[in-house]
Length: 489
Image (spheres, rainbow, N blue to C red):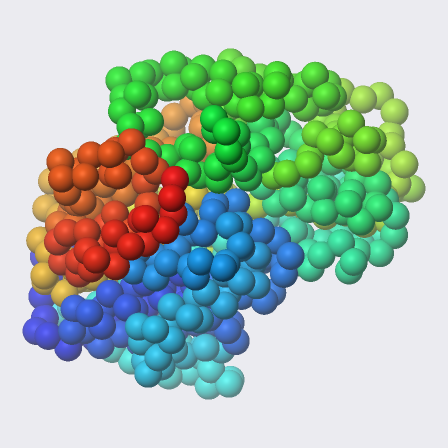
């Protein structure tokens, strides 16, 4: 059987103490389970902890109304787009509110997690140089997709005599020496780093393989400005896209982004020209086009090589540019699942080199090759609401309070994932239907909000994590409605 159900107080190993791991721990406790959280770093927070891949001044690209858990809204005085440091503090406040006494084993690296004969898992973890083995009834993998920085093999970069760093090592413009910086990559982190460096007086060459629409954090709506995520995501907006082919949806998005930007970014610089026949890619960033207009950022095509003098050569250009002092690789991450047995990694079709779709799981959570286990937050583009709903479904199934997916369901779900992986051309995010994804998990958890009771709030207005505390298991309706009113969108 896929699952062997256990009585109350079943033990569960949760790997990772980022947002998904914290949500899984809270959910496990609410269901009467005994969670043990393993975290390799010294601090909780995952990507948001100091040194976790963000930098202190970096701001979220989702507002506080979306970048939050369903029963823990940000305080009213918090910035609309919090800094990474503030998100880290928010995650600490979430733990302090819901499970302050539950120990989290920081500085503890999971070496292996292996299914046991008869059910459950054996976890071997290393701390302070010593390894220890423990048995658990179930396992939840919450290690995130930002495991290992991806460093592309570009001729001349390894020999470059200046400093080469990955974006995960960036700690702010003031920590970057020299006046000229080459940023490789123009998506989320690449664009944000380039703008911050330009604002600090650096000259930035930005190499971009795929051209993106730069989208500001606030968008004009009638007589006010509204956070971008509150404009993008609602059930009403989703309904308008239902029935469209991928190509029709892409065309609609391109048209919308063109209106936001006042035209194609190629009008500002030819190296930023977006191909409107391809799937749209975006970067939530402020001030990129302005910095390009002011010649503080020089966009280019992809970086092809660097010569012996450190001069970069870009696609579409015959002559090299001036050698930078620093190269920053904003080139993404690879997922690592080295703690799982090789046979399980093979069964879940794990491909570390596929940054877009590294594993094939039923609804991104379950696989029959990993019995009594679940994966939470292991897909490209995880939002807080989605991770939390995944955790509620996963722990509900593992505790026996929710029905397990049937073998037929899982087979069909994994086949759907395989189709998404093989789709060409690839969209920026394989799970682009955020609203539909959340509602699908809510239906599986039994916490779908009462849309017929509150059609304006739940359909016309933006999707909010608080919607999933209005009804069903774990409902906190009064708190949820208060949080929804506070958004005011």
